[in-house]
Image (cartoon, rainbow, N blue to C red; front, side):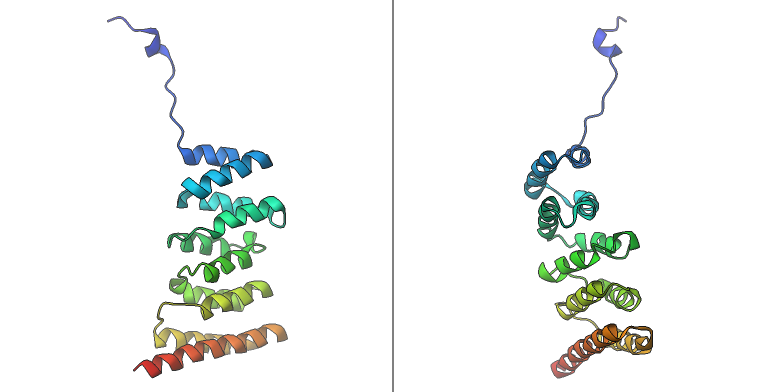
Length: 190
């Protein structure tokens, strides 16, 4: 059997659009990144979110950073919450954690599955802006949380008040009031 020249050519794997986007975002060239952001805004999917978050961490505070954040803020898919939490929970991304948390309450994404973890981060974080955003996310929870979960987390907050700065103690008292208000509304519903 005779082989054609075509059979001798190496086989190349066709790149996915996500792979092309990642390569383009990694160029560091503002014009290319802005073009790709426009495409992602229209045609993107959740798989590109980690790349956008990491890129935002590099460019935060710049015009390009604002454009990246705008694309991230437009994501309304519930799957995004677990990705946001991975970065909120990661100390290497603590500078952008408050921004990612603000997306949570502004876009009405459901962070209630992470209620306990948010309380832990509120207590353990040394970032006051992060604590304020956590408090706002919790205050804007739309899904119901069981009374048992709320009571357990109120107790956890009260048990840790002595570990906090005066400013954070003030925030903690406010967060406890928010949670107690949620509890009282639950009791009124019965």
